[in-house]
Length: 125
Image (cartoon, rainbow, N blue to C red; front, side, top):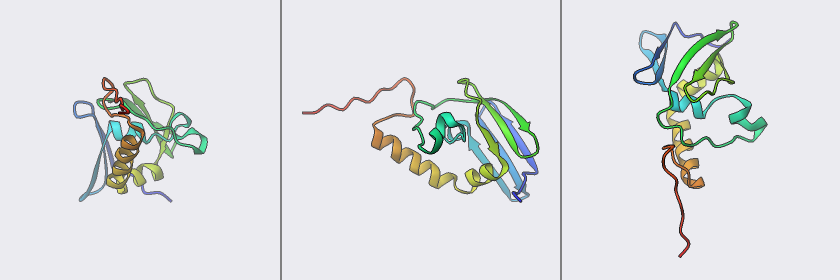
């Protein structure tokens, strides 16, 4: 049985979702982190994940429960198709640093940027 947070707070100004599991266990997940790790088919690609880029500055506009098992997050770039189960959210909390480092590494390898207004061009000299 997955642990359920005792409090969930959407901070629109700082673009973070806070999940509290106990008095000394509070996690702050940036909207960009949640967006690039969405469990949706659009991001996960039916087993072959599709690298998300240009999501710097994306925010969360809404969250709502999906039954008793998940949260539906709506991002301000229009993405709203991923259901974040309690188990998946807990894993994102516990593995945030590792997952973020892996994401940044994948971006670098692909020559992509977090900044939507930036395009990286490699010149072959």
